[in-house]
Amino acid sequence: MPYLVLRIEIITTRDWTQWLDTRRAEGLERRLRVGQSPQGVSMRVDGRELLTFCSNDYLGLANHPDIVAALQMGAARWGVGSGAAHLVNGHFEPHDALEFALAEWLRVDRSLLFSTGYMANLAVVGGLVGRGDTVVADKLNHASLVDAAQLSGATLRRYRHGDMADARRQLMRATGTRMLLTDGVFSMDGDVAPLADLMALAEEFDAWLVVDDAHGFGVWGEEGRGSLSELGLIDAGVPEYLVQVGTLGKAFGTAGAFVAGASQPVEVLLQRARSYLFTTAQPPALAVATLASLSIVKSATDLRASWRARVAEFKRGLPPGIELMPSQTPIQPVLVGDSTQAVAWSTRLADAGLWVPAIRPPTVPQGASRLRVTISAAHTPAHVEHLTNALTGLGFTQNPDFPPPP
Ligand SMILES: *Cc1c(COP(=O)(O)O)cnc(C)c1O
View 1 (cartoon, helix red, strand yellow):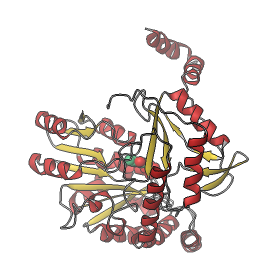
View 2 (view 1 turned 120 degrees about the vertical axis):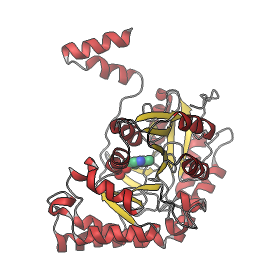
View 3 (view 1 turned 30 degrees about the vertical axis):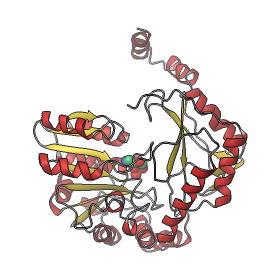
View 4 (view 1 turned 90 degrees about the vertical axis):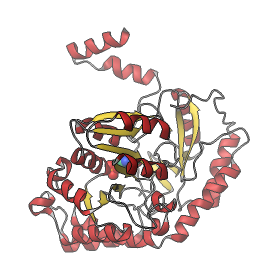
């Protein structure tokens, strides 16, 4: 009932005070912090030096000198703005070269560049399915996949996280063209989708399988080819029904995103995806920078070994009684439960010189607020020790009442 009253008030008075106050009271208010030094494992933020455990810059490439130099050279050669959408006159040689290089790296026919991963997801789902079709999606998928499914007009059927029996039930009830939609590595939990089972379901039900591996590409797999490669599922080639989405703003350290797959679905996106057609192409200089990043990513075996070593040290160094989520990736969330509690811990860690963000609803389910620790290849053993010592020293406690799995 109070919810209803609130809605009426919003609609009739256009006054959001009560909504804002409620969010504050529930520990759900979000606040911007201003970085005063480049992205990195140590940053100056709002006048303080903080050791960061929150970015998705998993290989520490966001401020890599070779990539910075490539961006500068790219700007000197190609200018700043692309000036138009790809299909008008905004598509340049560096874009083309990067699309070719990404496709070659992933051993697929073709790839298509987007300005952000959010837009790439809108394109893949809305481009390949629509009214009368069915999207079968994991309940913990990234918000952009949820939005993409809703915007597509297809029926959205969500299965319990990682529950393949539930996914199969939803597929059996599905009408029209079917699409299985999943994160590769789940962004807030760090676990990996059951990709082998999803591939089998896609084959059985003649469905598309769209894997958004935003947190997998670069991070693991042979030459950084992501989760499907890490699990050995594409050694024999990438099947035609499989479409992969990657973002370039995470392990690649640049910005933008790509869709990669067989020629036909990629061509369909180029022809009709609205978030491809009706937006300005990313700057060509950025594509030059990402080409430099891709060549580092492919050979970054040492960096991939490095984050794994830091994750192992983090797990070993935690005080007794702290349980992590089942994650083998750089995403190592510490479940707290209550939002206010999570914010309080994040604040105490900041006072100890550490930036570990509290992740709260609606990013995660109610009662599942957490400290989302992310480890980077750029962290040193001393950095990780600083974090585990702080968690120990502050007497960090975890709510023993784990929320039931969603
Ligand atoms: C970050 C993220 C996106 C969005 O990518 P951007 O390039 O940041 O827009 C999409 N999907 C997942 C799973 C993500 O983690």
